[in-house]
Amino acid sequence: MNSAYKDFTKRLKLLISKRPDLITITLSNIFTMRLIGNKTHGDLAEIAIAEFINQYMYDFRSVHVGKDLYRAKSKEEDIRIINEVTTSEFPVSLKAYGDGPLQLSTDKNFRMFPRLESEGAEISEKTKIEEVFSDPAFSDFDEINVLPLIYDETRKQCNIMVFDYDKAKKNTVLIKREDRGRGRKHPVYRFYDQSGGYICEVRYGGASANALQRGLWTHTKNALAYFDSITSGWVDYSHNHILVKLFSHALVSSQEGHTIALDKIREHIERLKREPQK
Image (cartoon, rainbow, N blue to C red; front, top):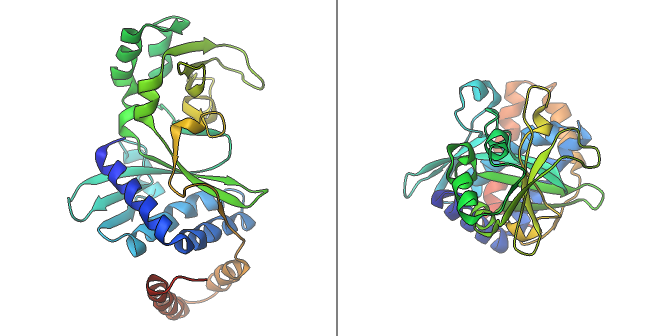
């Protein structure tokens, strides 16, 4: 994780600790989108978090990259954040996943698994592990900034959890190939710490594997020690049925109606900045 992104996540965590109402409102609106479609919330989360940064995080500006630029992206990114003070820019990949397996990188060039395979079934020598992490195939460990919105739909709770790549690299003492597992078609290389605790894994990525069967993954429940909760734990959210009505009406309204509504919403956002919602 680069220093600019680390600074951003620290500032975001501080803001949320001071104004938990703002993130609760935003998360409630994001996950309300699941009432419209099971996958709708993921795309709209990118727009929502980008706007959250623009509205509430002073000294930071965010731009939603958009799906139309996907083919031109050199790195995985959904939003681009600019620190207005230092002028540094960095990409962020937004993930909205259920509490459990979490994909950190798709490894679309299929380099990670072959690199590990070249070392055999087990890698335990410290120098060998260091060589693996310093290999270009594992550049994702340092270059991808993933901001996961982990949710539990049954309890209606969300936890914004950031994976600590530096701690993962520092604590890895064993990388082991495992060929069998429940519901798994392809082999994986799992990373473990000194106490045998699970850290993350690299999944197979050949021609017969789809996007959910390859790349760098971890598990939010099994690797809890390697996450930093930006929300300092689980945040309760609720469905905003008024938002669904607003969307349905907006879809059959004109731009004139949208302009009027937008002006009113902007006024309300300014009040939210001044006065926490109870």
